[in-house]
Length: 171
Image (tube, rainbow, N blue to C red):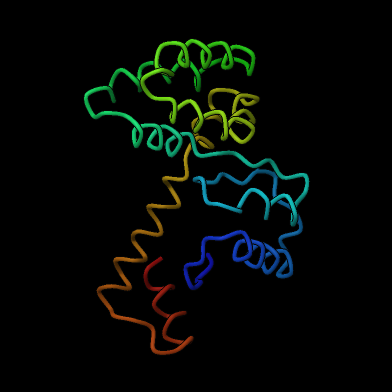
């Protein structure tokens, strides 16, 4: 766990990951991200061989930001063949079909997936059982939410010792 000041940019993530490496995390096999700007570049700098995977759930939710609520169910059904495809080639074909059906109405969704494609496709190289584990950052977000709730109930951290005790109690 990392208790930081909430920065989200590339410089912040490079600092965090470098600090983790300096503390002994010599390599990372895979890092699942939720679309934070600069995180994939920071991972590549610190752990060049690590696989950077976009959170599929965040990618789908991000798609809904550009669509009318009335179309969410249809878009979700149309996206499912992409992220459940057996191979990258099959996913690309399903994506082209999606783009043909929805690209005129929602070009921003098409751009979102095109921009995320290189961090989406590593997911497709794994068996379905493994995909279930690496498809989302929701588990860690749940832990973070519980910590935020505990901190909010107990107030702010007046010093580093109190922060450590509070984090340990929240876990």
